[in-house]
Amino acid sequence: MNTWPENVIEAIAASDDLHIAVHHPDHTSTGTLTWIWSVVVSGQLYVRAWNGTRGRWYRSALEQGTGIITAAGEQF
Image (spheres, rainbow, N blue to C red):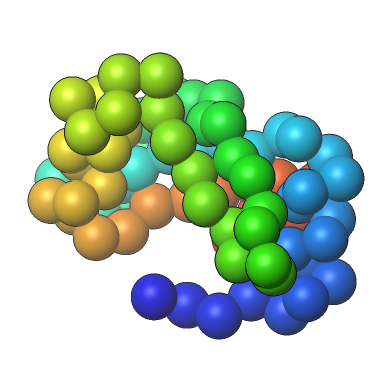
């Protein structure tokens, strides 16, 4: 798990605009950015997809362990 600076967490919380795209198996391209529900609690960022652990992006993220996050006008 990566630790993000507090100002980034605050910007994500304020924007309510977090998208995730996981890498394809080739690890060079990604799927479509998917809007993900997010919330910040006690300085920690949590995300959840509509379908929970059944969601395709979630299963792919666990398998690939890599991807792209865009939030608050930044790409991570």
